[in-house]
Image (cartoon, rainbow, N blue to C red):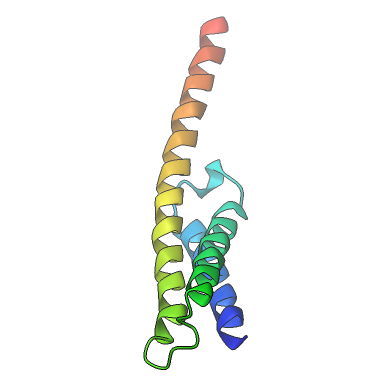
Length: 101
């Protein structure tokens, strides 16, 4: 139970840190990256628990570490993807508005 609480808290922190560190964070919502980070970490935590790694004496550290590594990678990729995609979509929308005038 402690592992899920720690993974949840750190995953949310990773998401907010990634949102704050992204220079394009004004392009998407404030809770998008923490939500992605939390969901990816908890899904991997559940998979590892069902695989039995949370109760194996030599491999229990994987349940603590792997979800946080996965959350960091997935959140960084999501920030890059959403920020870039939204910037391009906003530029196209602005161009379409300016052409109408």
